[in-house]
Image 1 (spheres, rainbow, N blue to C red):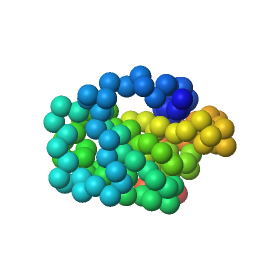
Image 2: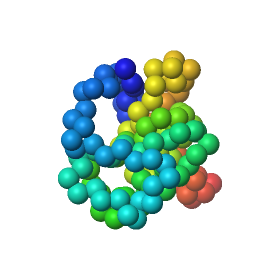
Image 3: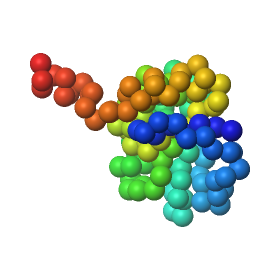
Image 4: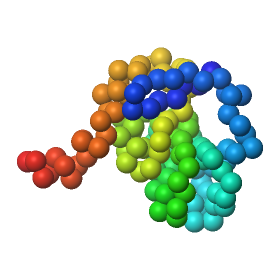
Length: 126
């Protein structure tokens, strides 16, 4: 089982429930400018470590290049990074059950209002 994190909280999903024919898995070291995403309904971008932020750039470039399908961050994304994941173009985050136990749903939901807590908004209000 894995946990899908959305702005509304956790959803548990069995690994084999996704249609792998339309899923494109990308490693964190891929050049997003060269990715052929034609026919992909879901692109899952690997985060091998919470300290590896290349996935955020990959998401941003894929969106800028016109990918309008579902974009998922997968792996070692922590709750503190949820807002950044959403702002960079991800629709949701897929984490392990172990990570979900260490960082429960309330920690992710505290960052679910990601549009209101960006640096620019805080500067304008201040």
